[in-house]
Length: 281
Image 1 (cartoon, rainbow, N blue to C red):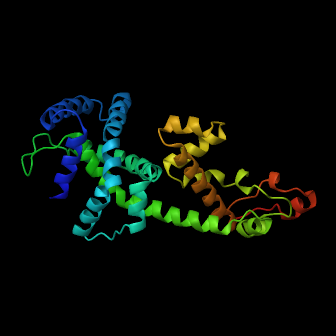
Image 2: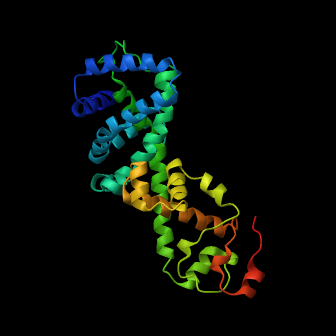
């Protein structure tokens, strides 16, 4: 079965109504949204509704491995290098949190490419006649998500590897903390470095992260607890914790590269603070 047919069948199996009715409804909505240039509050509502509509479809395809296999097939046909580790296939099959972690980034990337390709550039055509005919917007959007999966998975897999390496190194000892932070750390009791709030280039480092990670960190700084963050961003609690861990690892890397200061709260001896608190590139 062709991959595009698999996508259409997955959407048809999960969404209510028949394809023809959905295409007619979508054509009307696109015509209305075109009047505002696919922008503004009405488009935001449409976009949110579309994401909610395809979320269970994408989760099912990721759990069954269909999404990754289609992405691999499409990349192979176009000569794009891509490979999914068997262990990751197994993890995505067994872990709802892992699926959510990937799908959040997939959806955020797909929203931008879908708006441009399907709507602004007119890539979605309700009168398409070739193959099985036209598809509904949900099917087109799922296709965009599959295209974005390659980039998101690659980043996700690298982050998981880095996370494992960091936690294999960090045993909670003061010696390990000093090794992680290098010459920037002063002598003293540093039993909880993950609670530190770093400054100087903090915003620069945060700006290098994904939009979801930035939102989690900013809401944490503003005093929101994990449950509130998860509910606001429509992600799982474990995804919130993973985002915090991801950003903490980015701070560890920046500290080793001497891109940040260690704040005074980490220094318990005034003399040591005066000797070691100096700027870093």
